[in-house]
Image 1: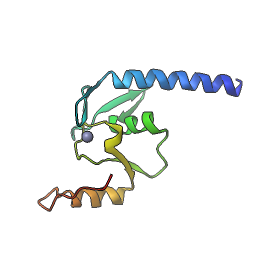
Image 2: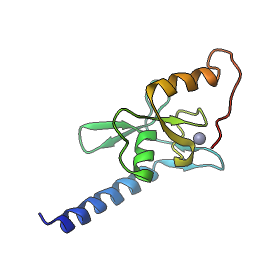
Image 3: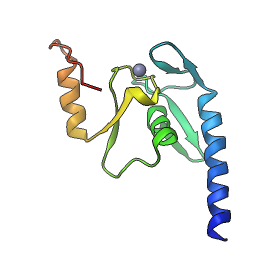
Image 4: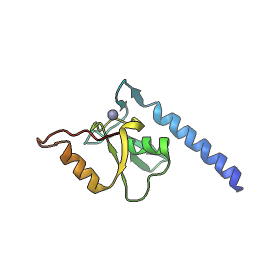
Length: 116
Ligand SMILES: [Zn+2]
């Protein structure tokens, strides 16, 4: 397949995926909430193709920004698992995730806002 043709095909797949994805999201003033199926932790689940299920917030980040670099997680600024609003999401390592959870006081500490 020619590169240009392949790129056009990929752009088309991406557009359809994005359309299907955002059709399941309720956009509020603050968080945008995933309105389809969620896992036990409240994170949205989105099927890509037939076999792959991705957490909805990861798909939101990919749709908005492109592929997620290896080894990085998509984390929430708003600490709201079903939220998929791209500007509430940021990339971090698993270590950042743990630190973030501690900083946000899951367990009783002080809530800390990250600078955006
Ligand atoms: Zn949010």
